[in-house]
Amino acid sequence: MNRDQTIKRIRKKSLSELDLGSLTKIELSPEDKQDLARGVELFNARKFWEAHEAWEGIWQRHPEDARFFVQALIQLAAAYHQLVRGVYRGFVIHLLRARERLALFPEVFLGIDAGALMATVCKSLEVIDKKNLKDLDFSSIEIPQITSLPSQKESGWPRQ
Image 1 (cartoon, rainbow, N blue to C red):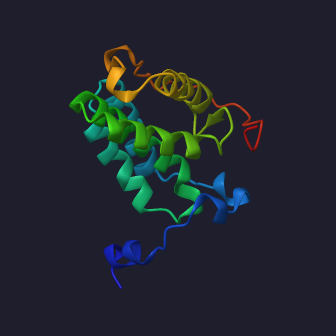
Image 2 (tube, rainbow, N blue to C red; image 1 turned 60 degrees about the horizontal axis):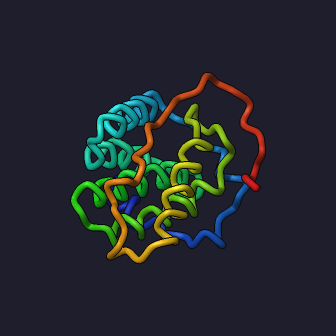
């Protein structure tokens, strides 16, 4: 069985089926680290589709539970890709999915300031919740920058 067949056979899990203990056990290979950094660089340059593609490689190389943080980043990139394209319903759907996944992780994960991302996502969703989508000025939605933090002990697990 080749790698592509293995990837296709991994059954996706719902959030309720996840083993929270295995979420933090993602060991990044040098290739994964390169893809993660490249995705961050592309995301911060507002090349959201390209960031999504960079992170997709990591997602494909890891089992379901371990890759949920990467999936959160992919959902975030998809959300902002939709926002830039003016597909506002898609933006909201992907942003909600990103929030669900980010909520599972500590403030700092894989060297990324996940807390700052979560704060921006929540702030955007609060603005959206207060208005009808038809009446919302989507140009006022903040697009975050992903910041890397020096290696720190990841605390606050799981996020409260």
